[in-house]
Image (cartoon, rainbow, N blue to C red):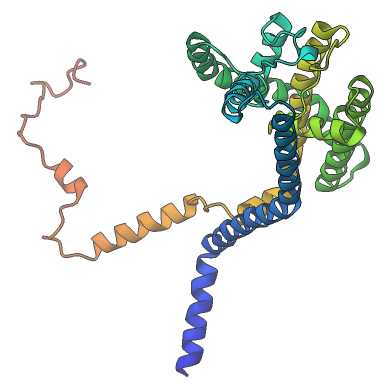
Length: 337
């Protein structure tokens, strides 16, 4: 008997706090997903890192053996200085000296990556003034970019999502959730083709050292605003039409980011995803619940003795000062009426 009562109480507890349990499972699932990613990346990339370290040590050892007049300490200082400059996008290699990082088109590309929070990291401000301006520029520019993208996406959604769905729904009488799901799928296919597959083919042609997978990887990392910076177009030696190429990449990134936001917003408005999100959100208090709470409070106060709580109406019915009633001598003064 006691076991059945305990089981029923546990079931009632779980059912009454469904949203909290779902949220707990969501947090645990996210932590497990992070751990899963760390395990996979570590197992895949660690052998390559170890191999690269061994190769660099072998090259360094061979270089010191061939140049005995150069000490290892002097070589270490030179390499650390060169690597520090490389972190700011400045290279000492002969085939990289022709390209500048802070001409107008490169600065425009850098500004777009900062405002879109992509941030490849291949170029960074060198001076203290540039770093301070980057902070101020980002504090103002990132919210401004969010406002701009929100306004643009809202206007595009009218013609790309809402009107087509309503037209098909009213024209052929199909189910609106079904139409929205098919439309979102087609929109995703078009976006992937126009902003991932076709640009990847173009980048693999324009960039000599990129294959299709690396070009597709760059497109995804850029438009998802991850921006690792390991692949940046337009940085090759003697890049033809480099300024125009950088300008075209800037336009591509902005248009691609808008397209990704339109697709994400379209999927977020699907009825199936709305039902899924409601599982993890806190439930809002309904007006009926508020009314029942008010009625319960009123019932509680009405059940108390008369001398315990004074009714507000009784307090208002008793004036603080008794005023005389104004009457006319004749009883029918038109002004008083």
